Length: 191
Image (tube, rainbow, N blue to C red):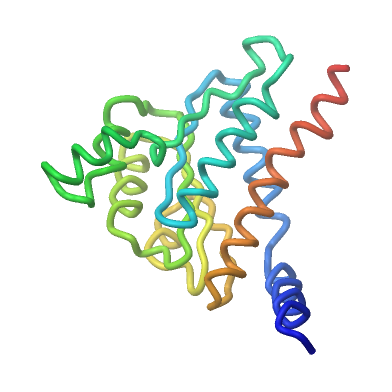
């Protein structure tokens, strides 16, 4: 078996670990936030930062384009606030890069989602703890054993694998499931 065949086989086994009922719950939480006009905040580090940036684009454009204002997603990637992130990272510490901007914008009833393979990055843990403390609804997309975020979040969608590439692939696929539900199912209803 070639490496690529083995990777695909292992990825398919990883995807079988995803609890689709929890992805459906996440879809419901996103729909509720949108319908109530709530803000949605997402963050992650490294590859997960890339995933949440991609997800934010998909939700802000793909799942919102051509819909009336009241049906659009009000979503913000804290990961994409580079000047603010580097200011906090330099002046306060890297643990503050997500939680401090979140303090500027998040309100009770908003939705917060973090994506992390380890689930233990201090900056995502701090942001998640703050979001919960003010009454935001919270989602974690975690890997391995769920880490700290898996224990804190209202909904933990855990990919119980150890290979970071497979975990990140599964997280991106789950993000696409969420986004494309709104593009493929909900937009069809409004057409």
